[in-house]
Image (cartoon, rainbow, N blue to C red; front, top):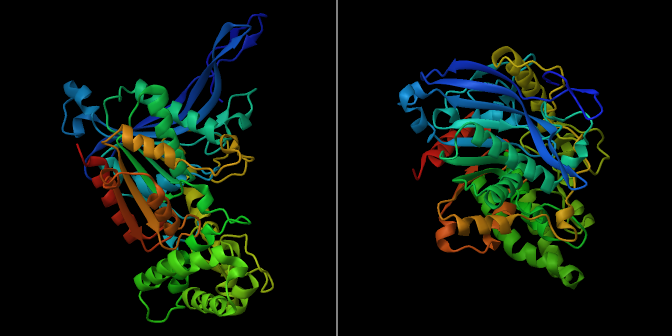
Length: 495
């Protein structure tokens, strides 16, 4: 943990003062764009009082970030025109979890260097590697990657409680403060600003945008929502809550199609008929429960078996309702394989053909190694930052995660997004979906958009992009190229 010179406290005891700790290096993209990386931990402080008296701003947490900023003389500006260069867009990005570092978006999609992981069916063997990312978003915008507390190298300052930051509101405020502080220190208040999140990071992005606007008056230009979930109730398989069962159905159909279970049927046809059935007959059947006639029930079972290719006996035993862990274990049971949740294209041998639930995720197992090797090498060898802490890629150290703000109601930030779109008529929203994403199904996100109270003009500020891939659609090279092209248009549009 970085410190400067000790000082004396009120009892004349030496205390160590926590300070920012950054490494800076210059680089050049193959296109000729020169840029500077600033890598390290930003100290966040909080003003504290005791008995009504100020005790000053006390260090609370050290947040790891990697900032990429284009050098002024290679952005069409001269050094003397540096203030004008500050109008270049800035993308602030993070993943989700909660408990995920930003390594996935950083090394898989946005940054100038990316992991050589391969893709399903052609995974790169250890020790893996790094390659250039010619389509990096850095060509069009500066980039700041943020790791919340206990992810990456981010930690609380000695003597503080990490759990203080492990909750919806606390995490929201911390990330907003990182963005405010970086923006202020780098004179970027007049730069277009974009927040890009993945998975829980999409919920975080909306919440942080609301916090920035409410607390600091900072309006963002756009929200990039990759594999999105803004209303957790759409994913929560809970007794008495039938909606998630219907919203997952098109994803089940897509994954079954990928594994050759639908013959010559096109993917688009497999998905569209599942969407239609989920939104009509299946949704109705789930609301009826025991009120369905035998004939109606049998017809629903047959339709579900046709759409998902699951065994009719399984569908009856689950009373038309199964969660993703059950689907993972069941789809390829006859081949003794389970399918991935983050990416249903991936498979692995099942632990036992008798298991009715699969809690393991072969897609995460396949990509965790390449990303761990990439980030641990990259920050030291290429960015020049040294730290002996383990880089926490996807950790349980943030649990339990508090949603106390939503006690008794679903975790839902759609109201915040509605308000932001109303207050900021220039705000635009980019959404990426993966058809094989079992964690945040595309049909669940579409359900959320359909239920938001928006005028047509606000809906027109959304752009929707669908990919034949999973939660991390950039694992598939063609999808990564399409995704980066659309994101480039997003961050440069409307200026």
